[in-house]
Amino acid sequence: MSEAYPRIERYSNKRFSEVISEGFHLFFKSWLTLIIPLGLFMLISLIIKNLLVADMVWQSLQMTAAIEIIIYKDPSAITNADLDLMMEYLALTLYSGFISGLVVTIFNVLAMCLVSNYLYNKFIGNETKFFSEFKKAINGKLIFVILLLGVGISIGSVLLFIPSIIIFGYYAFYVFTYNSDDSNQPVKDAREIARKSFWKIIGVFVVSNLIITIIDFFFHLFIDDFLIQLYNTSWSTRNFGMIILHDLIYYTVELIFAPLFICLLTSLYVSLKTRKEKFVPYQTSYDQTPQSYGTPYRDESSSIKSIDAADKPGSGLYCPFCGQFVKSKRRFCPNCGQQFNFEI
Image (cartoon, rainbow, N blue to C red; front, side, top):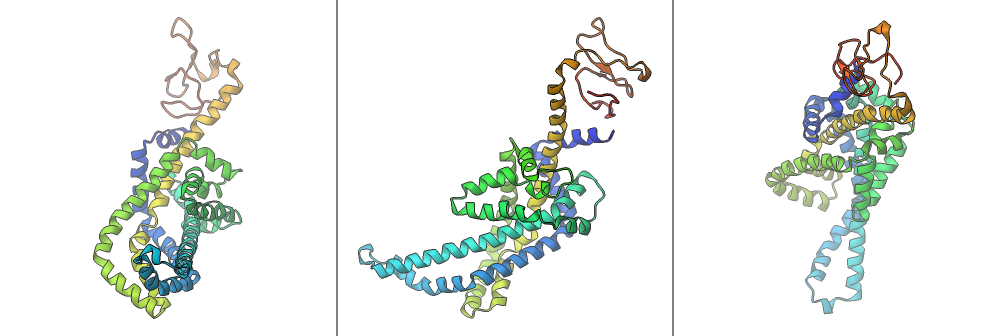
């Protein structure tokens, strides 16, 4: 227990820039371990996505030439048949886009859940093994995380993304709390840890995606001509293997940086969780027993010296381990980190 307080102090006092910096450090340290499982989940999501939307994409591609003609028509010359074709094309595009987004989001959430506890323990220095944590993360509670974050965010994206942002900002830490040993109400705990840190969570998302977007931009400057040819060839022949290959090349940068977001989120989660653990229990104790704090603690056997009005104003005590004067009520000595052996 004596080591707990310094650890809480170390993680809870981090500025946002330090949180991001430590998240990057975790990313580089864990990349080799995470890239295979996260890359595999991404590959599976691309395969399932294309299986589900292949026919819809094919139909929309068949309509493209006719739609381009309608777009350049004089608006007064557009017939009801043209409007029906445009509505069908729009419906196919939106529906296939929603299904694709739903599959990718669900697998992203699933992948983060399966590695979150491993990253958490590794970040705080606990002894941990990837495969044991991975197997432990697969349980019935995983379904609720997928429904809230995977399905909820996907449906919210249809409504101009505002509900998705709210769900993500409030419950992003559910990927950690659902499998936490000290969390009896994981949804509530995720919300409590995220409280007043909405923009920090959004900031982690923005930083992660901004880096990927910038690198992806330069990558596509060199690869887009090849990708266009591959796309046209794969869909003109409906070669499913080439379609998957196209998607893999197209999302190469996202695949390489797949562990980045969960590493940054882990760093922020640890910082906010330890800050909550530091202040909430002690504040509750003060609220419950305000009358007991006014008389300095005195224990002759442990050589704690009480302070009187002639020495210093107010109440307090001297730490029996290092002799530091502690004038505010707390469970651990702020100087040496040792736990006081009396009830607050």
